[in-house]
Image (cartoon, rainbow, N blue to C red; front, side, top):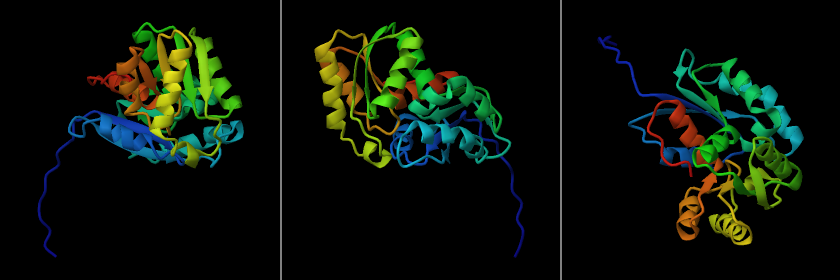
Length: 239
């Protein structure tokens, strides 16, 4: 076999790293709809997660997270890395998540859906919010408590009460849409937050906001917006 010469050409597009739960079937697809591949390189790794969403399975991810991050391409400098689990960020803590990510890769910035949602809501001067989640009450209440600790008023919340992640990914956008509208009908709100990266929300946010005049944000939309912001990209709206 004849060996032929070649040249190297560095790819200067900003690099984003996304750490997705093993059980998540939604966020990777939605991120590839949000981000233009000609403008950014998106690297995805998976972290081991339980089939059921419980405090125990979430805490187990804390141990598994560095290994998942370590599977990103070695020697890569990331402009932003996102840990894609809202409830995981709530229980592990955003600062701990960032420390674990940085222990295993070179990241200029680290974020998560909880941190991203706070940033997006502050950017829109939203204080009184409603939250829709798929979780059991124990998990959902923990997420609501994090919002309240960050200075937001959780005026209303609804949950589908689901534990099984495979079922969360199958909750219909129509059901999510109806839940968001119910919150808006029941209480004056500055914004609605759709919590969980495994919920299919990419079409819901804009539709509900357009019909009701109330901004609707999601874990996936906020995370994408915040990562783009941190990486110096032109972010799309934090839906």
